Image 1 (tube, helix red, strand yellow):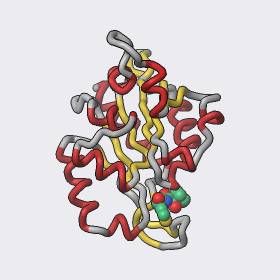
Image 2 (image 1 turned 30 degrees about the vertical axis):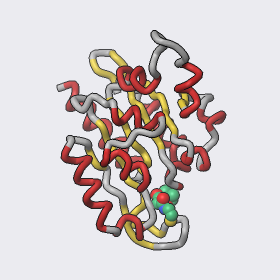
Image 3 (image 1 turned 45 degrees about the vertical axis):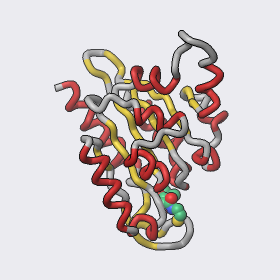
Length: 191
Ligand SMILES: CC(C)(CO)[C@@H](O)C(=O)NCCC(=O)N/C=C\S
């Protein structure tokens, strides 16, 4: 993913869905396409991957990093700097809780602050992932439509037998689908 030899900067933001077990595979595939990647993780997402392991490939930012970086006037504000750095924001996976927060403008951690301060002229892609029962609750469609009304691009969830044994919609889109959608979005930026 390069435009006029400039590496496209992708900010991958992951939340507390079990689909975060696929984060390293997703990051590696995006790196293979020649993009620069940084990762922002929510606290709950850290149950599903090793920050130290991923830090061997890319920078990973957590809530506490906001406060190691800022202590006085003039210090950089991490959630603003990350938003300025990124050409595209990829929310993968987007769990039910963070979907709800973003749809209402809540910003109570590093990840939701980055999204809240995002320049919506730049592309934001989101990959919902949650249990089927959560997906089918009527509040989900309302919140998804809010995000789409701001121009955010949904990479729709798919039906699978989920890790908890339920079968139905709610599984995160396949990595191939996510990466192909990302590439397509970036080509739009260029042309
Ligand atoms: C984890 C993976 C990718 C394995 O194929 C798939 O099950 C998935 O996307 N699940 C996300 C849905 C979820 O958060 N379920 C939570 C409770 S069932």
